[in-house]
Each structure stands twice: as structure tokens, then as C-alpha cells.
Image (cartoon, rainbow, N blue to C red):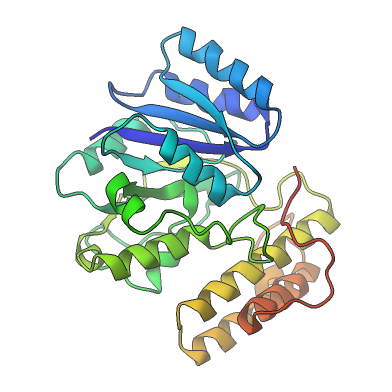
Length: 293
């Protein structure tokens, strides 16, 4: 099975170069990388051309703003035919051997979707269930976007990412687009509940944490926007009321449960964002997008 790597970027060239360098010697025949530039379009196209000349199967295209729009655009730009698609950030890198491990998981005709781990500078971002664990509406949250593997035909069948969700979208709901995608895929094909493929913990990509390199004000705006998106997904997918209430209240503990640069004061924007998402309305924050850089 070919793997398509779809990367949406605002045009951060140095991290993109590191991503492509990490993939260059790992891709197998038929694999392909698409860079979707939503800024610095000429620079991104030049970077893709540089690597393509050296034999890396990478192309560049463009789209309007929004991670979900960019990913949908990138999947459409892949070479024709079925494949498994995955969605690294532009600051993701692939440790040696990772792509072969992904192929070992997806190279069979019955593969539908799976998940693997993403790390940041502090360690694993989430803990995945053991391989063989049934997929459900609770453990699906342990898979984040850069750890999704989904068959292109299934991705297309459910309409791809909801472009009203995720970073850079026109709505306040600035995260949970990957979870929403998998929840819709679960409803579309119930085989996914028993056949979702959890990869072993040692298979992971590397990246950076949510607050990495941001000022306190930027980080708190981002956490509030992310809290909104998660709360909205809980409400939109009919999670029990008790779960939503408990989840919203737990936002206050976010600053206690997470290491630096997260601080105690970061719990309040997370709580407020989750409350906004659960209620489906916002309270006076002028700038809704999670990040501008």
C-alpha cells in the first residue's frame, strides 16, 4: 500500500526542510509527499522542487487558510489510486525506521485506519491503547492528527476533514478535526471498531508541544481555542452530559497536570474554551484563530 504524506504549512521553511530530510531515505516506491502552502507559496514550491530533483517524491500546491482545508486539498493532489494517507505537521520529523514500521502496519488489502504516537520535546503527547484494543468514542481521542493513518477511499467516503474545524478555520472550533474525522469514519464503517490498528508505542513521530515558542498571551489564546474545538466535538457527537461537564471542569486542572511552559494560570483559558465549545458560543474574544505563526 502506498502512503501519502500530506503537510499543510504557513510557510515555515526550516522545519519543512527537516521534515523532508527525515523522510528522504525512508520513502518506499509509490509513497508521495504533498506540501500545501498557505503562506510563502513560492518558497515552499522551491523547496519541493529542490528535493524532487534529488529523487524525493514531493510536490507542492496551495490552498486558502485552515489546516482542514489544506489537508483535503493535499489528499486531492496525491497521485491517482488508493493509498493510506497521514498528516504530519510542518514541524514533524520521522525517526529512522518509522516509515517501514508504518508500511508494516498498512500493507494489506484489509487495512482501514490506524493510529500511532506523536512525541514532543517532553515525550509522548498521548498514550495509545495496546494493539488489538477495540476503537471507541473515548479512546479515539488518543490519536492526534499527525498520528492518523486512514485509507484514502475511506477518507473520501466520509468527506475528508470538516473544514469548519481545526487550526485556521473560519469558526471558533480550532481543534478536534482529526477526532471528528475518525468518529465519522466509525459511523460510516462499523468494521473500524474492531479492526482499527493501534501501532506499538515505539512507532512515533517527533514534533513540538502546543505552547512551544509562544508568549504567555499566545499560548493562552491557543489553549482557549483548542479547548473550544474539543468541547464542540463532545457536544456535536452526543457524548453523555456528565462526560462533558466533567471534561469542562477538568480544564481548570490543565495547568497542574502539564509541565512547563504550561503554568497554573493556563487552566482558566482551557476551562473557558471548553465551556464555550460545550455551549456552542463564545464570550467576547475578538481573535478566534488558535495561532498565526
